Length: 312
Image (cartoon, rainbow, N blue to C red; front, side, top):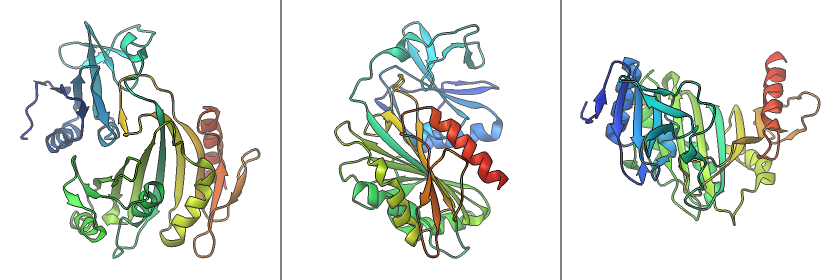
């Protein structure tokens, strides 16, 4: 592995990063792959002024963001106080409060991030990337700028090239990053393909400044437009307070909450969860209203919906 690590133990790889934005660079991606294979945790230590990129934040449980603030440490995404025990950063025993640094004011304006997570099935010979391309185009006004397996992405946007890359991996799971082209809104997506590229799970996040809130009332129409050309099995929409550039500070900004969920087919939901059609013809969908994107009670409705759909 080419990455230079500051500390290596049986439990952790510790990397010190002192830069404004810590992204999933090629050598961090390589370190993450090695940690996944060895059972270690990749612990990235930064000052409190640093931010994390969306692909690194979404890289999974093998990555942990540790913030060094004054004489102590805390977990950047949760505020949980941490300490070094000689082998790994772990929670401070009996700590009941957030670390003080986690509760300081954000360094920039807090807008909203719209996150869409969808699942899709593909034929073995179909061209991939249509769903994310359509969503990015609708939400930002421009198609994606590029794709790659680390940041910055190495390839310009060509669905055929992305498809060839996934097919060449065979049955191995493939995780990719797609970057938007601007249009006044930042957009980043992580794509996970498995089963030879026939199964896809993608999470797309679009940043909105305070003066440009997400048009959540239009989400059912967005789903209908999407599935007219590029079907999905399901799509979950949620809102989260956050930066419009889709980076993450080690500070409390609020919790995500669901807006709604689209499910393939003409489905009914449990009592108290409104449903409406969100697709027609060869791609019927049902849109379930879960909340306003601010209330945590929406997650209870989400769980009730999942239980109902699983049982029906």
